[in-house]
Image: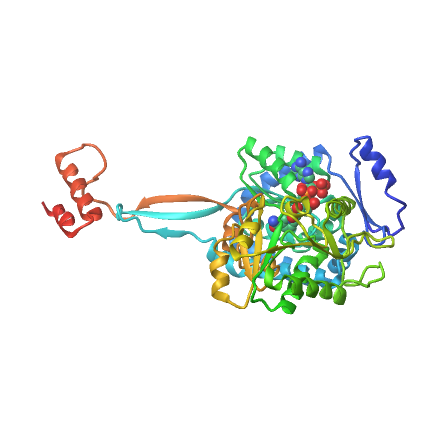
Length: 522
Ligand code: NDP
């Protein structure tokens, strides 16, 4: 329901939240202009119960039509996505405040993900025979079957990508879907729902349920069979807790405080451009953004100067107004977090060599910021900032750099910047994260072929890649007849012959030396 009038200040929202009243609708406002973009209704408890019931009822039929037919629907979804390019990009710019070119990358990643799923699902989800050495007369098979009803709880920062990813893989695997978009991406969520509808996927198979955190909680309480949660570490913990109480498996894609490590042989100019892009893309509102830079002392001064130059060249107008290449901060809370963290750091003696404040004007923009003289115990070094802010520390040795990078509650991604690929690979193996990139940082998060996810506080489980598809399924092993043995060696009666057989097999299979193995003949 596009409205398009200009909103007054968000005072009504503030008053509601002070009174702890959950509103019945969600208004989307542009972070660029404050204009109201649309409104949706919050799902009622009855609607939630109905959706869960319908999803559960519809699931066996959706599974039953088989993978090939499900992929035909998903091919139509890809075509709908292709046709919808303009309205999707318009919405990502309007509702999330993205730069159009950055929105285009998110959109392309989605097309590639659907295509990847179409190409690989038949191979990845097919059943597999396993040879069991001790039981050659039995046939063993690993089958994958859908969990049933999958709940997708999505964030606002890449609302198309982080919604379509679990929806598409979940549907391909034969699950039905309950989908709760972020309250800051409700209009984009409506677009996702319209793509599913355009693909003629039966209505009972996919349900969008708008709402705030309490709707997410109610959906978990309705006992879905699997949950894919992407969002903050704080909410992720609550989700994991609620899921654990009902023993519901969960994939948790949480935040990061990702480090870029710059070695002493790095090509400083090139590295500065790469790091600035990886830290400032989408105004830093990327789980895998570079938020920490750890640079070896010999190149530290030059790198910091080159990073400042790169910011000035591309994303700073220099007059306090936002550059057209800088995205807005999507939510008011995010602006508060960024402002608080930076102010606290500045008060503690950190220097902003560029940026360090909110930009002028009505839009919710924060100046691209590079902070130096940071120390490891500071909040700006420890907590996810999720804004266009990069903090820099200098290390004297590579070991110290690796130690600093690993000394974090998070473990999503990291990068190493050097001209020595062998050294980089050696150091990469010491980083406790889900992905390491060399002379690059951000692109891995959008590659559907590569399993994606973190360790430690960044969550568990994987999306993307073969693992991402497989995680939408449970495993059922099948053990059936291959041929009949003249005698069942494991069953009653336990005879001397069977004991001797077990003894001989033990020598033959596990004897460490030839002499041990020959004892099987005795
Ligand atoms: P939040 O954790 O605030 O919200 C995520 C989703 O959970 C929203 O739909 C939210 O609804 C919902 N929610 C809130 N409370 C509950 C609850 N108690 N139970 C169930 N659901 C609830 O995250 P953001 O939307 O702010 O997203 C940004 C975060 O996501 C960052 O930390 C970022 O690092 C992380 N992220 C991780 C990625 C990864 O792959 N590892 C990728 C992208 C982002 P509502 O919006 O209405 O509050």
